[in-house]
Image 1: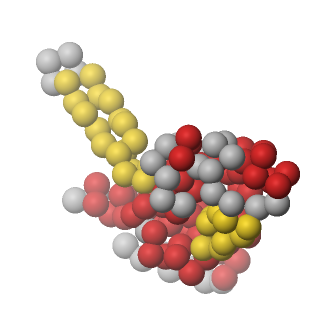
Image 2: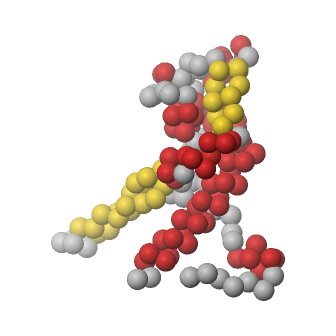
Length: 139
């Protein structure tokens, strides 16, 4: 269902920015125990991975100084916090740098998504995913 807006401001007002969180950065899977009537929603798929092709143009690469290397070596959480203001994207930094764990994160040249663009793009993705979820659950 497409909303009809009378002005651009109406459309902008209707779209709210989501705070980046584990819940908003992942689609969820619901597991239901029908005997006890318990429902669990668990993070299922990373939206960053799902829409990786959207983010590819915003990959940046930078050689770390000695001080930066000492600070970020084996510590992608700190790099994520410094770049994006959240530690939630540290697994993405590992993936971009072909590291399977934080102990492998010993790169002098580091790849990461442009911090000026990634939040805006992820926010758009989250909003569109919510719209799709509403459409899919309305049938």
